Length: 184
Image (cartoon, rainbow, N blue to C red; front, side, top):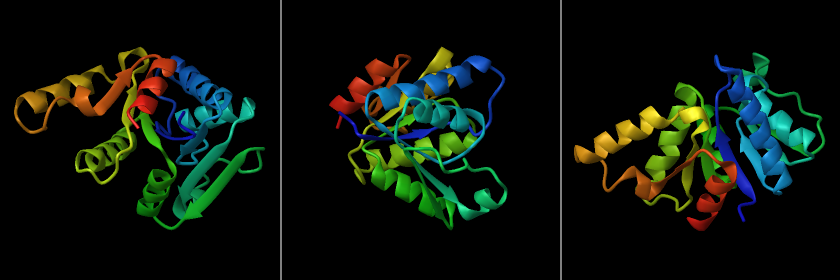
C-alpha cells in the first residue's frame, strides 16, 4: 500500500462547507490507513482541514512550505504530534520535495495552485519523468468539467491516449487509493 501520498488541494475553504468536511475525512482516512499526508503545509482552507483530520486521527503529516508563506503566516503551526514541516526558499523547491517524497499524487478541490501542481506531476508522468500514479478525488463532481475538457483535448489530438489511461478519477477514497496503489 502507498505509504506517502502527496495531496494537492485548496488553501481556501471554497463556498461549499461539504468540501471542508470531506477534506477533513480524507486526512483522517489517510491516517487510519497508515498513509502519511504529504502536502503544502497550509494552515487554512481545505489544506488546514485535511491536515487537522490527519492529526486528530494520530496520523503522520509532512508539510513543505516556502519561507514567504511562513512570513505571511499562511502555514500550519507545527507542534502537533506526527507533524513535520520543512521550510524551503521557493515554490519550485516545495514541489520538488513533495514529488520526491510521494509515491502517488491526489488532487482534491482547489484553485489555480492545485491545478498547477496537478498538471505538473501529470505532465511529468506522461513524459516518463516519474512512474508515480496521479488521481483526482472527485468530491461532489467537482472535477467533472476538467475531465470532460481533458477528453476533448485528447479527441482533438493534443493528448496521447485518453486521460482515463493515465489519471485515476473517482469519488470514493477507498476506490481511488486502491487504484492508485495498483498503478504503482
